[in-house]
Image (tube, rainbow, N blue to C red):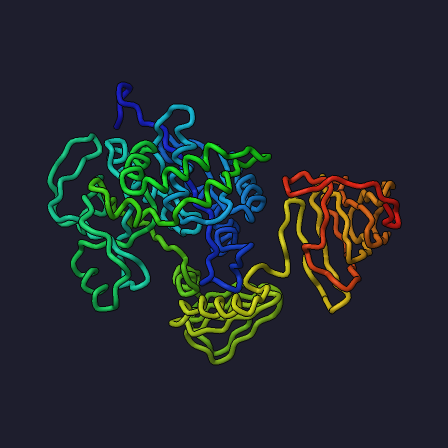
Length: 511
């Protein structure tokens, strides 16, 4: 326990919410990655990560680091937790974890403070939150004394899909009160308040090597979670990757406040080298400490991992959605949009979405990324987004499409409005099916209710708004020779998207 003369310093959670999670395709897509999905319960992985920080001693509001394209979904999901973030920092493009953490550290010290940072990927599952909080308490005195802490997961099986951390035997370690003492086998210290010096970080092993690691008791899975003070991390980064720190300082100094977001300087960040915290700092520092964690952890890096933590029926099946099975066992079956049936299957994964179906042996699900790469090479949209697309104002879903028409179902949140825009190559016909719409069409403003419709010709400036207190639902029928989403000229937008000056137009599109 800390006394009044030695208070616990502020701990700032830094939640890394970038990445695409391609191994969980077809649910995870580039514009809707796994951290934004509800894979385990009613919360998304990001929401569970944010909520998991509650109850940690001295915890502050979290910082969220995310991709530019995901900003509105991230903001909305965090808002739903009831926890207000200290900052949502937008990366113009990914540069891996070391620069992301550097920017978070620079943000954390802006007011002259030197808080302890708790680095948490947004896409991890932790079953036992009490054990997780205990591990954070164990790690805190190491971090406050200048150590760089990583959390090592007590291995249960000889896993070949994770990197490992080797702890020092008989290493000098700190007790919670800050005193030093010698410890024996690290593998015996999973429940006490001690950490161990890191002997080495090792790459993903083969099966026989993983079995040897498990038997030794000296090795732990590398969780990708860390804890250290902001100044200490920046100090080590300056020592081992000064070019990276220089670029991060410039990107942070040139950041622009945009609604609820802090947008890093794109030009400065483009000069930043890409590297993970493991390679850039943790494998080089002499002050790395591993704190063991036994809390039912998984990084949910594959469909097999989701099966392992899922609620299985008496036949070992994990089922989600409208699914019927017969004579099948040890399968993971997910149905998103229709009935899925399975007969006589064993150790299989079936994942169905509105536009794609995955069928794989459970032992080969790591190879899903090969399929994703093939889809990328063929420029298929199924890697990018789902049929239902999320926007800051609501959602739209493509129902039907041909060369010269497209039908969408659009949902607009209460009080939300789309940008004032026009299309140069398509016309639109809107049919209201639920709620009330306020439509700007040229110089006119029109109120529409259920079963009413309106036609927007090519070249006419228009805007859709939901002035009501329930979601606005409508069917949109597009017609034209080009139906791409890039056929949008924006004149005004609440959400910081690029606009251009508006020329005066009439309802028929003439200037």
